[in-house]
Image 1 (cartoon, rainbow, N blue to C red):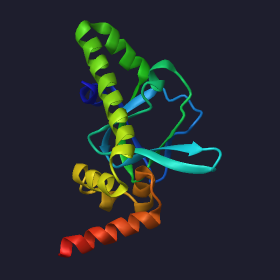
Image 2 (image 1 turned 180 degrees about the horizontal axis):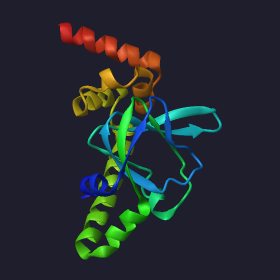
Image 3 (image 1 turned 60 degrees about the vertical axis):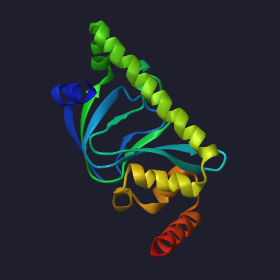
Length: 179
């Protein structure tokens, strides 16, 4: 549904490496489908004056500050291209019109919201129920090519560990795989 909506009605946009697609404090009234590239979602801890990576989206996935995009709420995060990206962008207004069109589209909207909640809730619980090494291994299992696409410091931030700790985990993994 979302993919077809973007491909049918979206505007193909190109983003350069490190280009911001949305900045914290802006209203991001759009959603999109990534044809190629990798984007990251970040937020800023004002007290530490530090930026944290809170997520990634890859080719054949979606991009949005959902549900803020539906309600014209200022974003609390940044969306930035890590690699050059091609993304079909659609207005949130179009999405809302589609949701209002019929019961099936309303069901799809509800399922999308439930999946997003489940994904976020699961990630939150993973911070407590798994070690940093286990989270690293889960990420590699989910996206084996991530090490070739995303800088290690971005992966470390996403895992809520330091780059030094990330190096230790990778060293241990390479040592364990040799045994």
